[in-house]
Length: 101
Image (tube, rainbow, N blue to C red):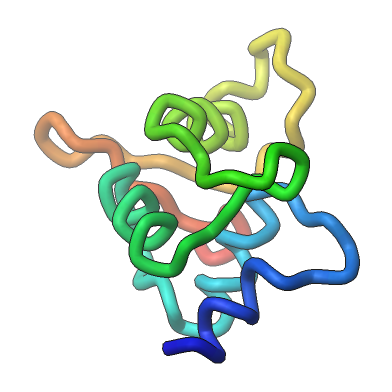
């Protein structure tokens, strides 16, 4: 468990949350598809911190980051790279890495 925590939190180079999520998906630490709740649980369970602020991400920040990284929001004013693709299943939105679809 300690190794996993260090893998995402003790970086020499600061990384955005979306970069940490993609790395965790590629490493098999987050299953695809994933929901906002899955990412919140992963952040809390692995003590993932915001490198700029030195503390965990707020739930609203996680939701915004996922939404802003979704190719479905390509026409939004947000300039985040669109690295995710979403699919609504019932009332929940599930996310995939855009290249995995």
